[in-house]
Image (cartoon, rainbow, N blue to C red; front, top):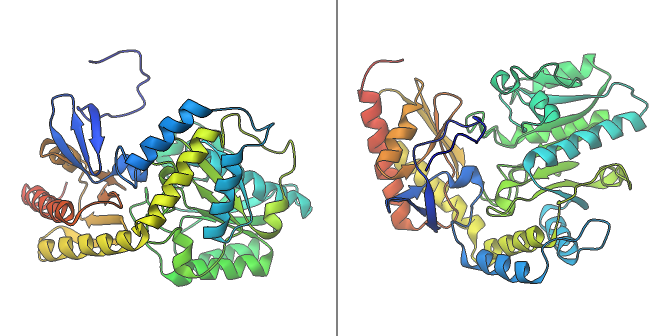
Length: 396
């Protein structure tokens, strides 16, 4: 079935899914697909996860929504759990990653104004992605996202990702900087993994200059990298962190966490959300965290990610056009020497769901619950697809 009443905002693939289970999806014709993108890092526990389904059903029968003008027990419980696993102090709940990043940007501006700066600046990175609201697309380092929506929100200073020296140069010349917003691993930017010293260096610069260190964990958070949060691989603690995607396993929820002085910036009336942190979303998120811990899925993400990277590297060794297989945990990127968007459709035809980002990077974001058999199938099928694609012709 097609409709002409949806706004034309997506280049949709020619398929509609009607059922899921674990790492698989089924379409309207009954064809089965191995899902290696999981709603773009959303369904970390797989599709139709039984504990999540039970939490949704039970809570829907009990209480879905009241309002943030009243206490919400599941919200308080979830905030306690997130604080315990992150080391952060306080949580603001919203509905999406863009909203979580909006909250972070507002915290940074409040921080700046309280330091007496009338024009506070936030350092952001080239090739970053932080959302599609006016503020978050202005922070994003992708001109395609911004085109046509000018004038952009001011107050963002851009530097290359992974380049501490450029950040130091900005620090020396711009006295209006109040914060740095960075992804521990760039997802939309092509699965770019910096050395651990990068986040450590940003932490040191923020401490030296009194800036807030803000990490966008919308894609990297909730076990995706093999740790609860991507920043934990570097042994640092940020001042602000944004979450969404995997936190609800498909139920919309976002969160902005803060530590230390940053946790005290917001007061009543400074920020809010009608639906943010409602009983349904918070109970589901609480269940997601419980399942990850109960089933040892942080270690599983590390193991599976290494197996996939090693397997693809071995099978694609010597294949002309494959430049690199990289990643962290179950964020995996295959860098090719040419644009490779057609691979998405070719994989779809063969019952495999993948993604291409940054024009020439095949991106994989599989479920943390993939079986060994499914993992080997993914490796073999994708290696064959890429080999055939690269053999089709010269660079485009």
